[in-house]
Length: 192
Length: 266
Image (cartoon, rainbow over all chains, first blue to last red; front, side):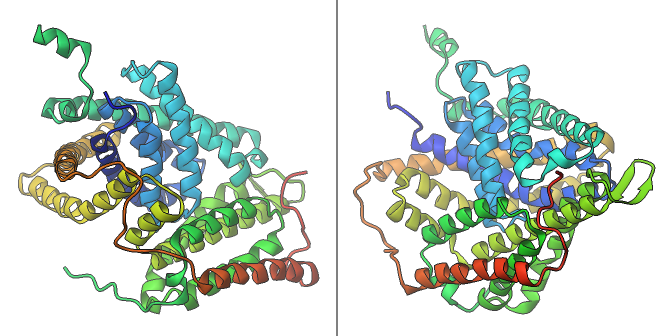
């Protein structure tokens, strides 16, 4: 048994991540458009920027995949000329590590909607942490800051948590996930 | 549709990609510690000079690429201008409370966003991804399995975009109509992401199997088709910032645009 991620795992993770990288890039202008409504409404869709980590982890279910996916997706967005430039990479790294910590805390053994939502929240908190330095959000009026945090975390649960879970559950029906997942105990039992 | 994406090679293209990457990350961290809006404006001008004069792309394309910058400026600054804390009130209207401090802080954030965007786009426009990953392998000792995975994945993006196009035609031909609201959004997300993801995973898996069958190995001792080294342009790039950064501080001290040196709320 080889330790760490195999070439297949890495390639699949990065391809998934780059698909989301393209989406991340498109998400920039959309985010900008929604922000013109005011009142932090754009924060509700911020969670899309955390989805690569959770989807990739749910598909491949191995340690290290969440960080790799989020960094790769951010890198993709950066190379496609995303509006936030290098910022994306720093946020991507922070968000990926945060999601990874949640998955690690459950021993990489839980793949239910609760764990994924927690990972989404962790990514959201990481992004808020970076925003304190990057966006001076601590200097917003208190009610506005609470709105921002609330909306962003709600969006994280909705998109990076629930949507990611539902997408992967549908994807399982196509049978592709069995190509990349490690064999589970159930598989071994089925052989006996 | 054929996209013409020709450009002239400039000195920015000649810089070692890893070096350029690391320097831009360092600049990012430095910019986070700039709280003086006057410095930020000068810094932005310096970034614009690189963007306009030295990327080697035609000005029309540069203009199109910079359209989202306007939106970015609005996103980064609007909430801070309208809802930021401050004492010197200019306008109070319902929840909106614009003060001198929040206004300047908002502008500051907008400028900061634009500097990052400009530097990021300068990097993307002047760096070929293949060279970037070859350089990562040679200078930063990135493991080949990661670098080649990235390069293989980049090659697949045009195929994915074509698939996306076909998918949207197929949905249209079959008369699929999307509802509004969260459920509709999810349906739309699902109808695009499932076929795209499943096809891509299958393709990635096939490529990985093929690479391993042809003895792609994880050994770090290997030869490289592109040898990427350093040149005098790396020094030029450092010199550029070594000149413009002190200059933007000096200008900010002697010729300030706004009489404020720290935009944070005291």
